[in-house]
Image 1 (cartoon, rainbow, N blue to C red):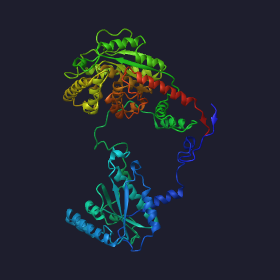
Image 2 (cartoon, rainbow, N blue to C red):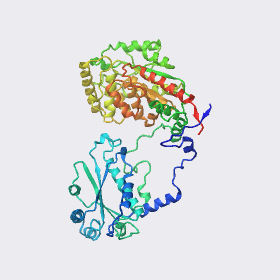
Image 3 (cartoon, rainbow, N blue to C red):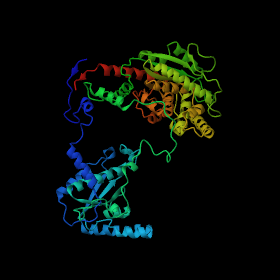
Image 4 (cartoon, rainbow, N blue to C red):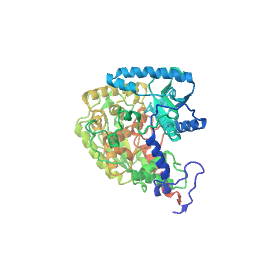
Length: 581
C-alpha cells in the first residue's frame, strides 16, 4: 500500500504514533528541569513564622497562576482564592485559630495537650497575606464529568490547587502555612461565603522568618515521615486485612501493547484519529484481539421456551418459539436472513423448546425440571453448568470463523431477562421491566408483579444470588441465556470477538463478564433495543452500542446488522491510505 505524507495539525498535539512509539520518554523535561522540580518538592515546608515585608503583586500573580493551573476533575476549576490583606480581617481570623487551638489541646491527653500548646501552629497574624482556598460546590455532582462517581472530587481538585500554590511559592522563596485550626462554619461566616461554597482552610503566605531543614512537626518530635515502602502497595490491600480474594481468572484481556498497537494503527491512517466515532472504538477492540483480518463470522441463535409464560406475561403463544427456530433452520427467519445479508453463517441451537427437539437444530437441552421462576427455580444447578459448558464449546469453535454474534428466541424471555438482571445487579423490577414484543400496559403490570415475586423467592432461597452468576442463572435465567453466556466465555477464551444483540443476549454477556471480568474486552454491543432494562445492562457492561434503532426484533437481527457494519469498518481500516510517519 502506498504511503502518504502525514497531515500535521496546526493546533493541538503535533506528534504522531510513530514518533511516540520510537521514543516513549520523549515528553520528559530536560534533566536540569526535572532535578529542579524534585529539589522544590523536597524543600517544601509548612512555614509558621513570617517577615512583615509585602509580597510583590507580580510574585503573587505567578503563585496564584500556578494554583489555577492545577488539575481539576472534569476541568471544573471549582477553586476560588480569597486573598486577605486587611489587618482587621486577619485579627478576627487569628482569634478563631486561638480558640480552636485551645479546644483541640483539651481533647488530648494532658501531656500531649501541653506539647501541642508549645507548638506554633499558625502565622495568621504575622504573614502579610492570607489566601483562603474555597471550593464552589454549587454545581450538582452529576453535572461534572467524574463527580457522579466521586462527589468529593471537587474538594480533591482544590487540594491539588493548594499543592501547586505551595510549590510555586517555595520556588519564589515564599513561605506557606496551611492552617486548619478553624471551625469551617466560622471561617465561612468571616468571609461571608454563600451556601454551597466551603473552605479548605487558610494559607499563610509571605517571606519566611524561618528556613526549616525538615518538616516542623517532625523536627519537634510530633511525628516522622514514613518510609516509602510502608505506603506503597501492589495491586490490592494486604490479604490479611482485606476481603477474600476472588476466584482465579482463566481469561486475560489483550495486553497493553496490543491495545496501544491498535490505536497506533488507526493513528497512521490518512484521516483524523477517531473519525468513525463509536465504530472506530469497536474496530480498535477487534484489532487489539488480533482480528484485524476478520472478514466474516457466525450467528449463534439459541431458542428455548419458558414456563413463566403461564402467568400471562407474553403477547404471543409459546408455540411461536418453535416456529421461529424452525424457520431459522430453513434459513428464512429474520435473524438468519440479517446474518446472511451481513456475510455471516448461522448455527441454530435448541436449548429447551417444548416438545421434541426441533429438526435440524443442534440440541443442547436441559435434562432436569424447569420452574416458572415464581414458585421454583428456572433450572437445576446441574443443567445450568452443563448448558454453560456446552456453550463454551460452541463459542470456542465459532471464534475460529470470525465474529461471534449472539441471538436468542424465546417467548417470555424479556420477563426472564428482567428477573435475571434484578438478581445479578440488585435492581428494582421497575427499573428493568418493559413492554417486550406486543405487550400492553396491563401485561407490563403482570410482568412487574411476576418479576418481583420471582426475585423475592430467589433471594430467599439463595444468599449468593448477587455474587454467583451461575446461581442467578439457575434461579432466574433461561436455558438460551445460559448457553449464550457459555458461548461468550468460550469465544473470549479463544480470543474471539462477541457481538451482543438485545436485552436477553446482553444479559448473557453480563453473566460472562461477571464470571470472567476479562471477557468484557471481547464484547461489542451491537445495538440498544427499546427494552427498558437493556440500557441499564449496557451501562454495567461498560459498552456503547453501535446501533440505536429502537429494535424489538430479537433473533440476533440487530447484532447481525451491527456485525456487518463492524466488518465494513475493519475493511475500511485495512484499505485506507497510510501516512509515512
